[in-house]
Image: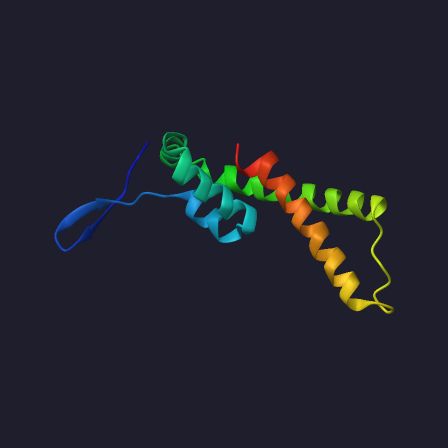
Length: 115
């Protein structure tokens, strides 16, 4: 492995590349929740992933899996408990949608984020 150095105020500093930093810009809600959980409750795992530069990839995978799981759960909930007609009773529709989203989020947090 060859390192390049740059001169900063008379000091030679290595030019290190950190690919996880670039991946962090594409994270969504669930990726950030997973990162915070690792940082606060699984510090050793978080630090190993950070040093091996696999943290960004892991968080992107979790975020993508959580979004896909959320879509599946919402479809299943809508099949088992159909939403009321939005044109007839908008408040009941909003209540049902929010309830479905809350249920889906709780399942995702238990299955993917807080493990």
